[in-house]
Length: 455
Length: 154
Image (cartoon, rainbow over all chains, first blue to last red; front, side):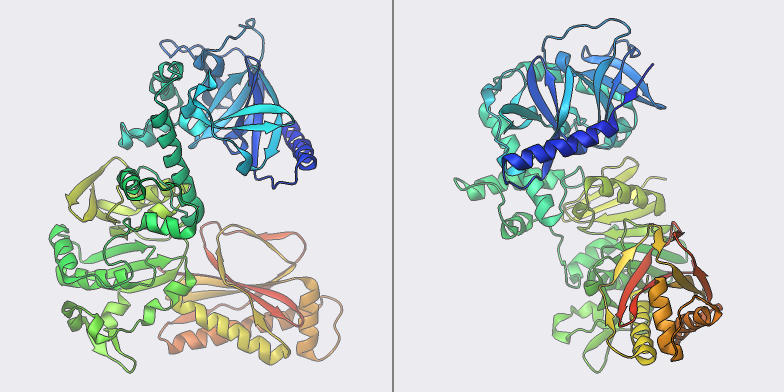
C-alpha cells in the first residue's frame, strides 16, 4: 500500500485560496472548505471535518458491505473504512486499474475517521459563511438533506456537503450503542447501507427537508450563543421543544437571531430550583429515590455547582437521608465570580424553606449554614475539562451542566462520570438530560432524571 | 482548587509586591490552566504540604527578575548572580508565607518547603494532571505570573 500525504501542500493552497478570495470581496472569511469534483461537478466539505488528504489504492475488500464501501485501508496503523462518494450518490465513475491510486479525503466526523474517494481534490477555499445559499431541492444528484448550501467562488458553483448528516450514525435508533458503534470502523457499512436509497429519492417532500434544515440551524445557533450542544443527552427535550417552538412562533421566523431568542428557546430546559435552594417537595422526592448506602463515607461530586445553592441543598438532603454517614461534596465550577461567594453564603430567613432551618444559624449578616454542613462541601474553582482529581464517588449531581459543553467534551465528561462513580452509584442529571451511556439504569420519575450504575 | 485558597494568595502577592517594589501593582484576570507551560526564564518554586499537596510557582523573564532584584536590594544589578537568585527566592518565600499565614487564620494547615529557583532558556513545566490557577501580576518592574496548584490530600 502506498500513501502520499499531501497535508502540507493543502495548507499552502489554503493560503493562496484565501488570498484570492480576499482580493475578490471584502467579506470576512470565516469558513474554509476543501473542494473536490465528482462527475465534473464541484463540491466542498468543511475543512474542520477533513483530517488530511491522501492518495491511496489497493483497498482491502470487505465482503457483504454496502456497494459504496470500497473496503478498508490501513492508514498508518489505523484501519479506516473507504467509501466511494460517486457510488454513494449514483454518479458515474471510471474504475481505475488494480494498482491505480485514488484521491482520498480522510474525514473526521464525531471522532470517527474514514476515507472517501473523490474524482479530484482541488484546493482549499476560504469563504464567508454568510454568503452560503441554502440548497434547492431540485439540485439533482444529491439529496438536499445532505447539502449544507451552495456557494459561488471565482465564478464556480460549489455544493457544500453536510458530512455530519451524511456519515453520522443514526442516533435516534439506538442511542445507547452510538459510542460502541463509533469505536468500530467496520460498523459503518451496515449503518449507512440504507443511505443510497434515500439519496436516490432526490425529490423528496420539500417541507420535510426544509424543517430539518431549520432544526439544524437552531442547533447551531444554540451552540454559538449559549454553548448548548444538542446531543443524545438532551435530544429528547430538543425535539419536543422544537415542535412547541413551531406552534408558538407560528408564522414568525423560527430561527434564533439573538441571544434573547436563544434564552427564550432554552427557557423550558432548566431543572426546578436552579439558582435557589431546593423546595421541600423536591427534597422529599429525591430522598425516596436514593438507594440505601451502607458505607460510612459518602462522597459526592457536583460539577457545575454555580453559586452553590444546589450543593447546600444536597448536603442537607444527604444529612437527613443518611444521618450516620460522613458526607463529602466536591462542588466545582469554572465561573470564578459565581463560586467565590459560595463558601460564605448568607440567606434572608423569609427566603428559606422551613426544613433547612435546623441546619442554619443566625449570623451578623443573615442566616448561614452550620459549620458541619459547610465543612462537608469543598467549593473548588475548577474546570471539569481538565483532569478531575476526585476520589470514587457514590453520587454525581450534575444538573444542566453537561448540555453546555461541546459534543466531544460531553462524551468525555460522561465517561469521567462513568469512571469515577462506584458500582450502584447514583447520577442525577438535569430534568431534561438523559444518560446515553450503556450500563446505567434509569430511575424514571416525572421531574427527576436519575440513574444508577449497574453493578 | 478550593475557593477559599484563592484570595489569600492573590492578596499576599499584591501586598508583598506593593510593599517591596513600590509603584503601581496591578492584578490581571485569574484563570485556570492544565497544560504544560513555557517558563519565561526565571522560575521560583515553593512546595506546599500538610492537609494539602501542591506548589506555587513564580514565573518571570530575566529582565523583570533583574529589575525586581535591583529594586529590592536598592542597587543596580545587571547579571543573574547569586544575589539576584537569592532575592527572587526570598520574594517567593515572602508571598507564599504570607498567604499560608492568612490561610492558617482561616483554619487551613499548610506547611512550606524551602524555595528553589530555576533559570534558563526554553524551559517548560509540565505536570499533566494538575490544574493550576494563574494570577498574573503587573508591576513597574515587569510581569510576574503566579501559578498555584493545590489539591486536597485524598
